[in-house]
Length: 446
Image (cartoon, rainbow, N blue to C red; front, top):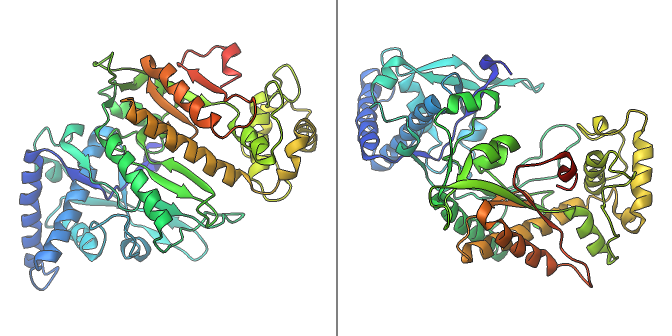
């Protein structure tokens, strides 16, 4: 992706943390309010409520531009201007979005103010073509703040109130739409659980072992941003028992090698910080499928369908796709065909998986994977709560947990205990530990 094509998306939760930056933003906000009247951008001053919202919008815009200077100064900031986002009426964005947000952008980009430059104006056509509005700070903008204003420690993120996302059924092409939902005791309990987790993650002693974020982020579509620590729980198909995975933590989008190389957690035995280990449920979805079918899990590697580890990574992707699909697969899932020998057709791979897992074959094509993912999310949230009770920092990563290396065995025992409660008979939970030192032999079972 070219530099011109890379952007950072606006984060409405950004705020100033250092007193100096907070004071600088207050002075700028007052200056902008005066400029609005001077250049006839509004007929009169705002009332207290309107001024509070305007101040929040200015602070968010300023902090986004400042921190981007550290994360990747070559990127432009993509800001929303569409009515669907600005006036959606959802809790996402809190007081940041609204007419006051557009007012803040308008006065900051006014030629006589010259704090923000519009790089590209956004648009959306009925046919589907669209482009985001992108901006960047001018030299005058950055001269308005101290040399320390762009440092990560000068910034914070306020907590999201909208931590539950209910999405509809994903169409064949395009994205699933977010569904508005009525509050119930179930959603209140789900929300309380995530808000409690987010408080702990915001205070967690984690950091990245680098000062050169610009170089790190050169190869990322969205910048790795260590201030993004809070999560949202996303449910699928308009149902509260489908999906439910956690998204939003900066560590989730990092490449595996960068995660092991740069991410550090301060633990009880290593206060200076230590590398992470990935404690992972092994072959979880097929195991949960056998549990749902009340059939014993076969011995051996559930993904080794062809024997000798041939196309194991491809079988893993294809088997899970078969659990999530509604109906028979008509084409290879994305990036899957290359994981199989070139002479194996999709029908042959599907047939081999179906034969190996005949006991759960009736589940293929039913979309049950979303329900299995919900069970996975419960297992993970339960494990995270138990780790917190033991004083262990755990970072969720889909179906696994990142912990300090010295605490990996303790975390493994917790995950085994959680999954063991769901399994029946003499079956044992399969939990693996990845320390980032993966040989060809060991990587087959991760």
